[in-house]
Image (tube, rainbow, N blue to C red; front, side, top):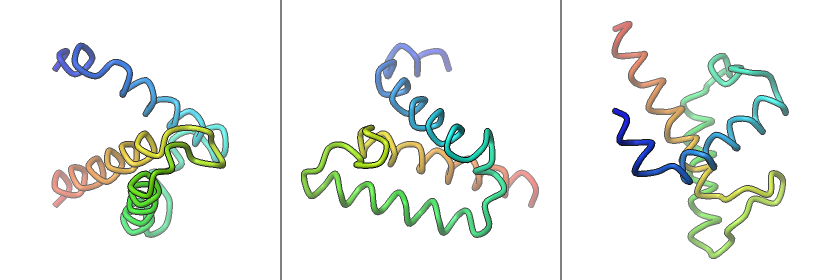
Length: 88
């Protein structure tokens, strides 16, 4: 498990910056209680992917990489799916 830090330190740092920005904009861990979270994070992930695919590297609002936003949304979706399986 520690290899993830060895393999992707810069990428993880950027995703952490996205998480920090979201916590400041909304509230820490508020993403867990967003209504229709799975749909909203899927939509956000797709939007950031599309912007990146179209050649726009940085999100206008946050100034952070679209790829980092996309990764954060993917992690949120994965966490939600894993928690759903654990409860189901």
